[in-house]
Image (cartoon, rainbow, N blue to C red):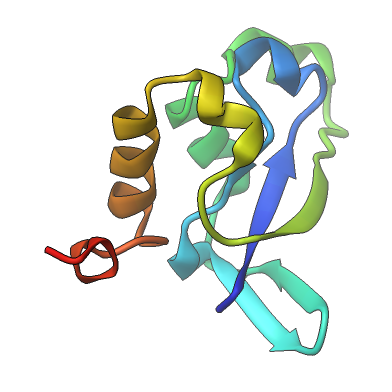
Length: 103
């Protein structure tokens, strides 16, 4: 997959979002059509990735996230952070493998 599906919950910028969903959570239907696997709990995942429960509760029963695709790889907007930390996140998420780094 050359693209990743990004998730952006309400006010997500305060908590480091948007973030790419893990590959096992993403379904590629073909062409530019991507979605979230039916077996994947997005709310549980965003909570584990730094989004506060209070924000979920504040939105009541209707909690909606924005989704969009982005080219897989190092996000140039994040180059201000430690590049090694970003590469580690990509490896951990399965978007980058050590073989891609020549190791």
